[in-house]
Length: 199
Ligand SMILES: Cc1cc2nc3c(=O)[nH]c(=O)nc-3n(C[C@H](O)[C@H](O)[C@H](O)COP(=O)(O)O)c2cc1C
Image 1: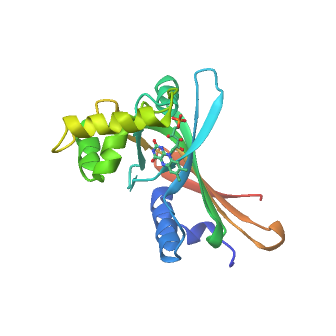
Image 2: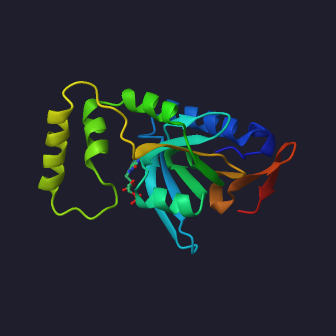
């Protein structure tokens, strides 16, 4: 792996992430959009889980979930979150931190409309993060929603997207003998600054 210089990366970390994501896709990484999302409750107690990056643009990283789930409840109490992505075969890690806000109902509806019918039914049926008596109960709920919605399935009121708008980012590239490269970005008034960090 050749050494990584700050100038090898786009000056905007979201554009740099897009470049690395494109490289991960091109290299055949399985589910390169799988990202670890860390949130924390109002007392600062953290929790982390994988979600799928479903949007990556100049404003941030989008993911979709249940607005009553543990992650969403934590984000309502504390909107600051962190994302960690690791692409093993490329020896690359990306970290991002920043506030998270809900996407508009229109954006969520557009995304939801494009989901497979089975995923739409599952979104309606699952009270994500709430205790569930049995798998059968979930299957019965899916069947019930299927019966009551023979045609188009609307966006559930309790489901939608979030966008993390980074204020800090770090790009890590594996080096021999743990001589890794780390390039850290910080949001400034006039754009982004980049520095190298010790591995
Ligand atoms: C690879 C992978 C991708 C996942 N993608 C999502 C996702 O996009 N949205 C989601 O709500 N849960 C997703 N999950 C499930 C979450 O990891 C988690 O179990 C769920 O969202 C409940 O988390 P919470 O109780 O912290 O809210 C995914 C799990 C894995 C392993």
